[in-house]
Image 1: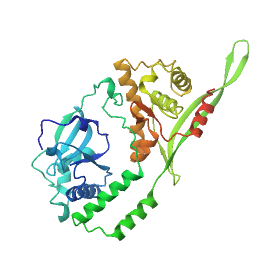
Image 2 (image 1 turned 120 degrees about the vertical axis):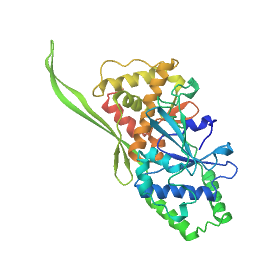
Image 3 (image 1 turned 60 degrees about the vertical axis):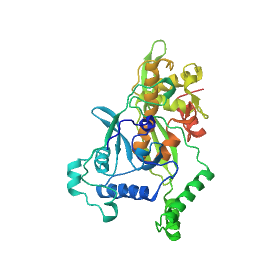
Length: 354
């Protein structure tokens, strides 16, 4: 597909997800449902994971198109495809060879109207600049936005369900009550919850101290972070030392902290310094971030966004990412929604924070 003017909002979509663009006045139509199912079918045939969300957009030229964010040798790009270029977009999204996929992929008759395997057009590419204004403090070097945590309410969810029922009846989709009940029970059975697990390991050693002789000391050898789901399965996620120190510091701010406060917060810096100095493979005392400085702001937001990327990578679950990454709770305020008093007590004890 070809389009010259791409809405700025599309550059803020997260990595790891595919979005179908919809008419905000109609919502998800029966055509969209079939398009989404075609992505599921393709993913199943190719053995790939998929997260598909709908994104309402005002530009009518983009309705019923798909969009995703990828890293390329030319930097971060937004790919926008219509049905004719969808397979090519998905191949790049999953890192597959498009020509090989075209030779082997077989679609059922149901989806051939929604997808062309060997399309005549190509996805539209939009490069995403890493340079953002101070107001967009939730972006890392690859322009990944720290999304504000969605306000999930019973009323909104019931409205979404009602809208789905209307589509089922209005467009004759034929989804029966038994199928709905079966889906409900399946999702209830497969529902996941998580908790944050922090495991710290120490090594004892002896060191000569003038006037005291050999003194026994200890140093931290590991500080491992994991999410544990309700079935007991662990999802360890990796963060480099600086990103880990910032992450553990955020644990102490139960209600989050505004970016504008971090520069001047003695509490934040003292916690951050104590944690960083005890982590393995760190040197020296970390400097204080001045988030009024563009370079420092870019560096800091790059570190905070790494928790989001790491958690999404190991869980492939946006709920886990939303609850346990450093995410926005309201305008300009970020924190770790799922952090508990037990997590804070663990860090306080292991890092000897008074």
